[in-house]
Amino acid sequence: MALLGTLLGTALLLTLLTAPIGTATPTVAPRPGASFFVIGERTEGLAVGQAAPELSGMQDGQPVTLTDLDGDPVTLAALRGRPVWVNFWASWCPPCQLETPVLRDAYAAHVDDGLALVAVSVQEASPEEVQRYAETYDLPYTIGFDGTSQVFRAWRGYGLPTSYFIDAEGIIRAVHYGPLSMAGAEELLSTIIPAGSPAAPRLSSSPGG
Image 1 (tube, rainbow, N blue to C red):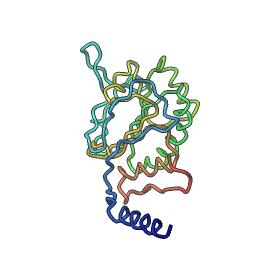
Image 2: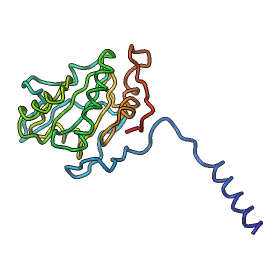
Image 3: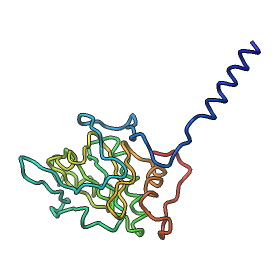
Image 4: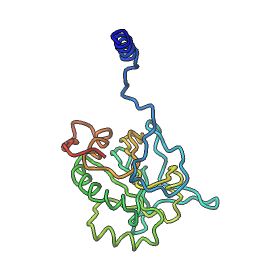
């Protein structure tokens, strides 16, 4: 038994010594949590390090552009130079409802940092329906209405909520599938908001998203 224990100990030591040291660059795509609401066939989503595509798509060979609840265009080009959080969601989606206060509070905490938050609603009946939800919960950030879901498809989405964190140069710095806690949102916002900003991200002690 002593010999067996010695051999097992030696094997464990060798495993620890030869294990690769972790790097800052993730090598595995983010995995959806149990509360991620799947609405389509799983696809290989946009990856960290890629340039974010424009908020547009194609339908029947014609371009489809994202508009806000007043019908005005919403584009990433107009937000270049600012950190941008793009969140795909729906008012009828339970995990999206759970996440709504986090979006509202995180945006309020970082609006002075120049943060732009674009919440893109998908598979909704009408802009008026989404507007009622926004008014009920006093949502101050931009809400886009993706009535055809073509923007969602162009961004390779397959479930809700899905968040992309984009830096001032238009590069995706973080992706998250599923609802975020405030601590989780702060951690991901730190990838796109410079540390010297007036209201730099502050991690709380609550569980991460």
